[in-house]
Length: 352
Image (cartoon, rainbow, N blue to C red; front, side, top):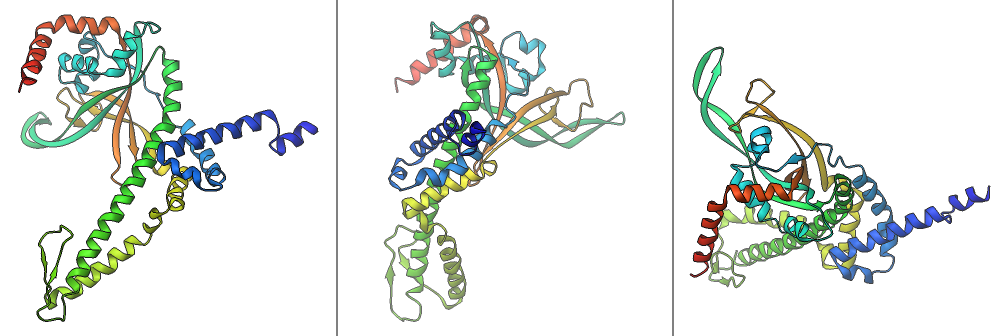
């Protein structure tokens, strides 16, 4: 009975530990966004409900429900997915050698010869015209959607799949902190841009109805002399009202309390700013998109699509991967001449 009462009041050991974890997470968020927010009284209590929702949401994200892809020379012959992600084995080698986290992992004496990591990529879709077979006939100039991947990055190399899973869950909060920080900066820049536009509009309106009056625009906008015709007045007035309306909710960003409100809003609705969804697409060996596995050369490609932020959202494709130190060495031996040529070109380029 007494234990139940202590738990109800949040005074038992488990409840105390949970609250301590929540407060620590709040400090992580504030430090990553704007340390000045700690000057506000009661900032922890204002963020406490939201941080609980955020941590629960991050814990339920569908991370790594996809089997890891082996990054090796052999996989280019045995796993068609690798050929869809990299243009050649050489491009794979350059990705592995250019990954500072992976190189640091293999250089560490405490780590083994195997690494599990998350590979982040940008997915691009373009339309081209090609030939397709339909009912036994070859049709030319048919619009085809081609999918390609670039900007490969390896994230959080770990000694085991379990370690990577744990690291990924912890990284989720750090990613959301970066999303919040970026949102604050974008909103602040939007406010400055709108204020500058409003100033230019009002300068132009100041010349209307005063013959011979000239206003010099020193704000750096296009054109240094603001002049106004009668036909432009209505459009400028409408734009002035629209800009003023857009500025109203952004005015809070001039104060710390308003910035804290932005942080609170994101923490209480994390799903609107950090979205992860498992997706499967079907591509042939040339990267042409198919609706289903309708041909022998079509491969199912599974990945996690991550969308970060609402203002100018960032989209990335994530896939768990596996690589051995030996895999890197085999690729280096296979492309030793190409690597030497690239290194020589880099040295020559650095002389000018």
